Image 1 (spheres, rainbow, N blue to C red):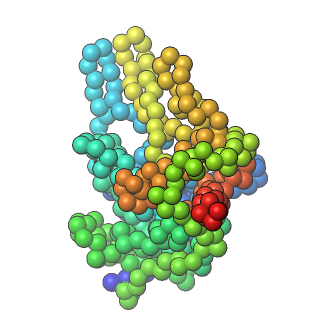
Image 2: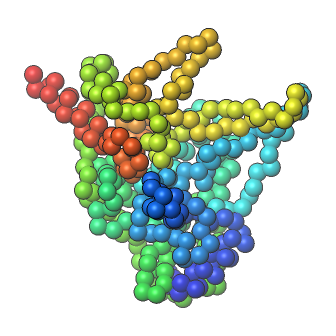
Image 3: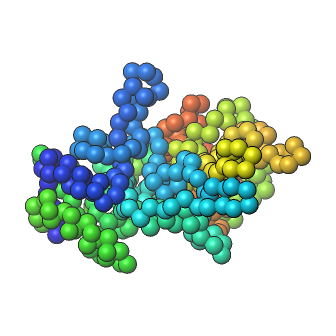
Length: 348
């Protein structure tokens, strides 16, 4: 069963969600863009229909809903430590198919990457409710989700679509193991919406940007030592914007905040494999001092190492790294260049 809500009813429904939890989605930040008079489109709290932006791609991904930029792991006082109280409130997130697939990639890192799960990520992840946003036509500039196979997903709890003077929604009654969440959404919608015919989401089938991914068997030492990486040393400034905008980058570092000689807290915060100091070790040693070497590390992880371990590519083709790079470095073009280099080597 589908649902239609007027814009005012949609606002009332959002208010209802806030009574239960939090609502997170793409929104606009006026005068916060690259220039003082431009708009930044990013993720933020959604309180009304006017807050929600469905026709722009955000520069940042929604991963902070489950993996915050910074979070306190525990508080310490001498020899004792206590962990923060974990919330049970649901987190409703408006997001696109590529980002839902991106959370699958994060799940592998934080939940299926050894004998123990990350309890902090697991807590937030279990509270997420995915409200799917459809992409129209070919998606957005720099998107290559079709090439990565992430343009389609069935792991949404509800789909949201703009309609005349309102919003239409459809809950996913076929989502196995999520019946409680589906019932939770359905019960809320019936308070504010009118029932309409059932519909299914529409997914992008072709992007303007297309990528040919080389096989993992061919990404060998000859690619590792190829001079192409020297070009990125000349261009990349190591700012890390590609990492912070990415839905699947999951590296973090630790930081102790001391209140006094005995008391304090330990935080983790996002880290970037592109930033100087990422590989620093005790004694002053470090690796990948050149930015081209860092580009190689990231690229091989996104389309090679992760695939060998989990069977899917880490990159989901959202194109945000291309969108935010101040040096106009294109990750999609980097992948295609590797494919061309391999083809040239095989042709000799």
